[in-house]
Structure formats: C-alpha cells, structure tokens
Length: 435
Image 1 (cartoon, helix red, strand yellow):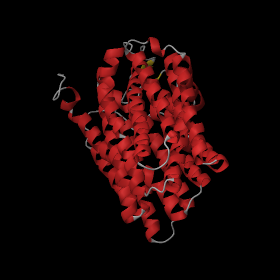
Image 2: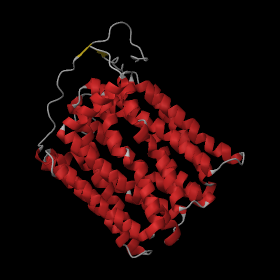
Image 3: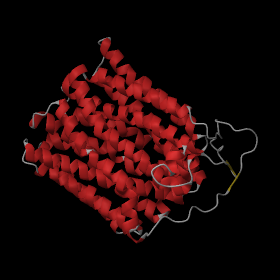
Image 4: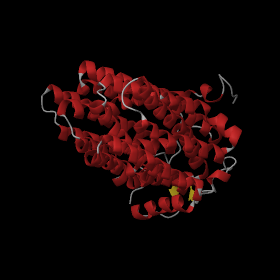
C-alpha cells in the first residue's frame, strides 16, 4: 500500500469509517468533560471537594473495573463491545437534559451519571486499543494511532470552546445533548465497518477470571518498558486530574473567567495535541524511539509549572496558561502514540485486552485519587498553592522512564512471540468463552 498524502490508511475505507465515527464521538466527549463540572459549579455551586468527587466518580471505574473488563474483552469480539458501550453512553448523557427539563436534576445524579459513563468508557477504551491491530496491519499502527490522536486533538481544540459557548448559551445540561448525538454518530460509523474481525482464539486451557487478570498483570510487570511507561502514566495522570480539578475552580472563582473563556483557554491550549499527533513520527525518525519518548515526557511534565507561575489575569497570564496546556498536549500526545504502538506491537493478541486493561488500571486508576487530592488541597491550602504542589508533582513521573530500558530503544521490536493458542472452530461467535 502506498504512502503519502493519498496512500497508507487514507486508502483504507474500513479504517476511515472507524476514524470518522470516532472523531464525532470525541467532540461530544470533550463537551461532556467540561459541561459536567461546569454544571456542578454554576448550577449547584459545588465546592472544591464536591468537584473533586465528581471527577473522581468519572474515573473510579478505571480503578475498580478495568482488570475484569480486560479479561472479558479478550474473550469476545471487540467491535460489538465498542458499539454497545457508545449506545449506553448516549443514553446516559441524554438523560441529563431530560432530568433538567423535569426539574429533578441534582448533583447526586451527576455523580451517578459520571460513574456509569466511566464504566462504559473503560469498556470502550480497552476494546478499542485491542481492536485496532485486527483492523490494520501492525506496521500501520503508528500511522493509525497518529490519525486517531490527531482527531482527538482536534476535538480537544474545539470541544472545550464549544462546550463553554453552549453552557453559557443553553446551560450545561442542554449542552450535553451534543455529546449524546456524537455517540449516536459514532455508533453509525462503527456499524458500517465491514472488515471481518477474527474470532477470539480458544485458549489451550480455560482459566478463571482471577488467573486471567494475573496473566495480564504479569505481562505488564515483567516487561520492563511496559512497566516503566505504565507507572509513569499513573503518576502523570494523578497530577493531571489534580491540576484539572483545581484549574477550573481557580479560573472561575479567583480569576473571574466565564465558561466561554475557560473553554477557550483549554481549547487553544489543546492545539498542542494536534501538533504532537502530526509530528510524532518525524520526531521518532530523528531521535529514535527511546530518546523521542524521553523528550516528549520532559516537555509535558515540566510545562504545568507555568500555571501557578502566571501572575493572575491579563494577556501575559493567559499566554502562560495556553503555553502550559499546549506543551502538555504536544508531549503527552506524541508519547501516547509511541507507547501505545509499542504495547500493541510486543503484546500477543490473546493477552492484548488484559495487558491494555492492566496498563489502564495502573495509568488511569490514580485519576479519581488525583481528583480527590486536588479538591482536598484546594480546600486545605488554597487553590494557587495547591497548583504549585501539583505542578512539581509532575516532575516525579519522569523518574520511572529515565531509569528504565526505554531510553535505549532505537525502534519498535519485530513483533510478539507466537501465541500458545489454537484457532477457534465452528462459526464465529460474539459471546466468547465464559468461566
């Protein structure tokens, strides 16, 4: 398949269906990510601790459900799981404006919706990262992940700004209708994919859920590069959720920003994510895989200190906020493209769901803790001092990767070892094996 502007995955219609449907879904997801906290802040006058609890509810499933979902994903086709998870998210998000119209919406209900959406997000994300290697060739994974990260970055650019405008114009609950529509469009795109997905391989010996979880975690912790990257991501994400919780409150209450301005600052800053998605392959080719990952992580871990260093409101401060979020976007997006592709290349397919889930458990599990820590620090020491503490915490994330084999990697390995499985017999099935 030719490369170039009209080559590569640009000529793969099945990948383009996935890409198009997911792009619309990502825009809706970005609207919800800002609209739910803004609904809590502006409609229910949520405190710092309450906002931390709301963000914690959104990400608690990454800690409590990820490992079990990983085993489940390895036993089933991944595409149907992605479709049904987006159907569920559309219904949940759409229920918020319905409750608002009936005058029964409460902050407690927002907690419940955030928690359930989080469960379905875990299911979709683990399924999605495990599905991509079966849709495209392994040598296309960097290109595929780069394209999908690029549209995710575009959603980060436009989503917060659009969310701020919609919240200011229609109120936060009504703005969530756009997200529900996005999930419906994503479902339509996924349903249009016609490339057959291989049936799950039948294990030589059926194992229990507990043993399946243990096998996935064993692969994560015994593989030094995967282990280091997962631990770095967990530390980074803990600090990131603390930063996000604190910044929304800091901008709204101490800087006097309105919803549209907050969305604009975050949206412009997200341009960095798009830059990172476009430049990821070039940086790896120039520096080599390991050095590129280190450079990317240095950028995104050092940038958050600009947020509390900014003097307050005004052009200089806004420039520093945008620069901080843009640098975080550039570094984190490029590193995500490279480390996810590395994981997909070196992990056997029969373990891919569990390894992805194990990495998500380690990397995303700290998110609810980060939200709670940010909320507690904001109440205990004040918002700006809490931002300083959080910003310096990012620097510790670097140590996991610096003192690992990752910097010595020149390129992706050839591929995973052969799988100890036999091909499934009989007609394809979506049900998979059960305990």
